[in-house]
Length: 204
Image 1 (cartoon, rainbow, N blue to C red):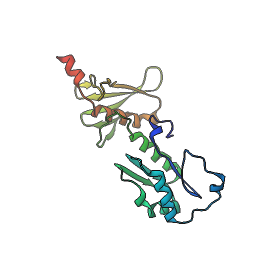
Image 2: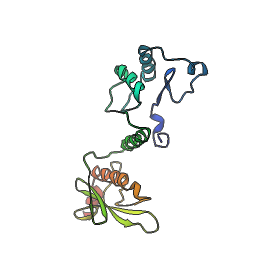
Image 3: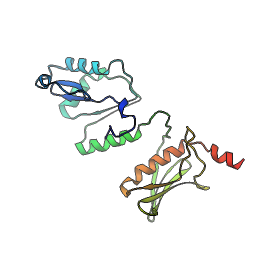
């Protein structure tokens, strides 16, 4: 799931094995795999060596039970980051949490708006609103999929561009209903962070 995302090569993935903390990119040696982690101090040293001289924007911990207790005991080794989260849920919930966490990540040069999205439903139309923008599921798309339109009070949200000048498309085709909410949320955050310069230029 992580490796399929753009920029995944910049991520640091660390796994907790019976021998302690290891880089997920390096295979565990057979002799190390047979060892048992001696104590928390050694675990702290292992984790510290894997994190040294690196800068992190976000940290997600996905451990359970005694493993999570171990990390809590050596949490001082973790560097400060803008977002630090942990989960102790079931495996299925952890995967959902990871997917949500990855969806929030931004590549270099990408700007997305924050804030609470208000969700609602009118008759059969599902919609979400953020700031002046509303993303609305308007029904089946021509051909296959589902059509979502991003609108303002003036109508279809045309003439908006991302921070790098890329025009934003106010009509989006989503492959399935299960993907409607995340697709609409991404569109709303992109439009709320956009600039209407293109629209202004046409009006002039």
